[in-house]
Image (cartoon, helix red, strand yellow):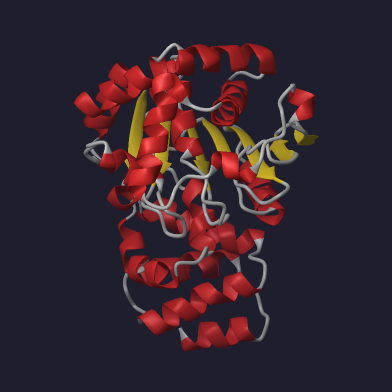
Length: 330
């Protein structure tokens, strides 16, 4: 690792093959915590390249426990995290709203590293038991239209870096990798990124994969999802768009209106309030807008208005709530 660090300190870049091998060696616990922290810090101080991110991704996908859910035409709705905005669990709520419309969702997630509550924290607080068994996850998809892939259950390689990431409590390139390494390889992706540079990196990587539909979201004020606090960019196979809340017929909202609380308990209370149909206008609007774009990623022939109406029927008709209850009870 000393040689690798010296190379990086000299402003050199890693090839795709080098990046892949380094991550494989990290997974094999060949390096100590100090070296790992130094390695992660390099990519906080300068942009990661497409080759480096692709190499890291290839390593994690190769080392992951693979499952085959290809019969279900699933979508993953996930953000990088690390945006420092402390919102409520927008992507997780969006996933249940989308599942409530009948669309199959294979949600990849983890415990929080840099915010109060990640998707795994939330589901665990509701009594959900994580599994990496294909038969169990298929049953969840068939009965509840959604399954949850808790990253540590599928990525044993991440165990080697977990203590260092937790100690740093900062966004690292691992935040960038999470949305790209869903072990079920869903056919559809709605990915949120904490900055525009990462959105463009994702776009370079995903546009090479002909079998994948995707939408990559970045709000211009730094959110890794559609926040309605500002305009946002979306990258798809058709290109890049800048969209304002007003162009969607939505009110621009304040950051405080989508705050997620100061603990997992706070976040869970907000989550329950919204999924029970009692969210504020701002909370509902944000969740439904994200859900509408997710539905459009799966079927681009849908208008935003049609997709929004489907999402609204799911949330306010309590189908999303029933989906959560089914998932937990299976």
